[in-house]
Figure 1 (cartoon, rainbow, N blue to C red):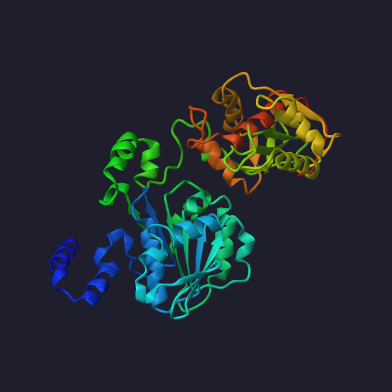
Figure 2 (cartoon, rainbow, N blue to C red):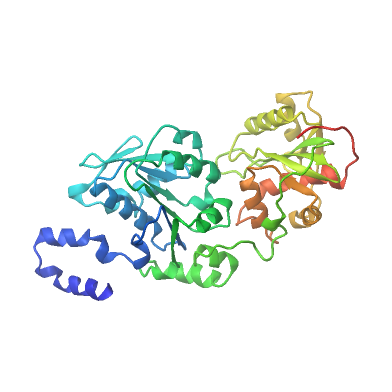
Length: 416
């Protein structure tokens, strides 16, 4: 392919202008091997790659190819509507940027429309209910490994992927060891393409100097640059094998644990909110109600709502940041709610170690649907962060387990 490309470039000056244009938009000439659709009878093309490996461009070109063949409608699924629009459609390698002038689609609201009438609909994985109703002949799902509601959104998409003779979907993502990713990789209807960041010769030298060299051969680098699926961090307290379904009933106290953010803006840390109940010698995690970037009155209302929904005994809240103000926010929602204030006097890792030991002994179980919490637990490292971010879910969980199991006495029986 590289020889053909070089030959075409040498002859470009001798070609008519319209032929030059068609050459420039001939993806089969310019694509790297991993960016071209694989042969065979597959349902899901899983393109796993490091940062900058050309995943988005491959997705945009695949959608363009389908549209030019008259195959549609097509689902374009990002984590949020904003990401779907700004990355998949309008991004540097998005559909609008790579489309030839004679076959360029127009974006009307959340729908891309090509001159031949084919449509592509933008959908947010963060709202799986939006997938009810529409039908598609194909779908492109981008950065699926980081979707917070991955399994629910992907499953709902499958119900709508039923038009045409051969409905197919492309999943482009930097891999993470989520349940959905492992499920797709094990599916015999999936074909997998892989690529490392370094295959893209167009990446800036500064990127390689500042990022590639720094993270080369590290666990994070293997995942983010080499596109490897890293099952567990070797230095993490939690491993995925520790997460088990409940095998009994909640027969003791239920608490809502809250790790509040310092501020309440869109860029703030999340407010960790975890509900757990005592079961036998251990506990069951019942809900992860964590909120991202919300005002104090909103997360306080969410915590109180969880307290009521689970008929909890109290709300355990960390007061290192905010002190009495944190308690007052909860009291403004409901002054009758019992509040147990706790203060962190040791580092996150040290506080988490005895809780992880409970998991290792099989004393803590998880109800279904706690994927985001489990991902954060497995990403929690000795630096006290999870993938570079504040581990707010982990903090809330640690407070819940500390209150229920490490410092607990046993009262009343409840059904799960």
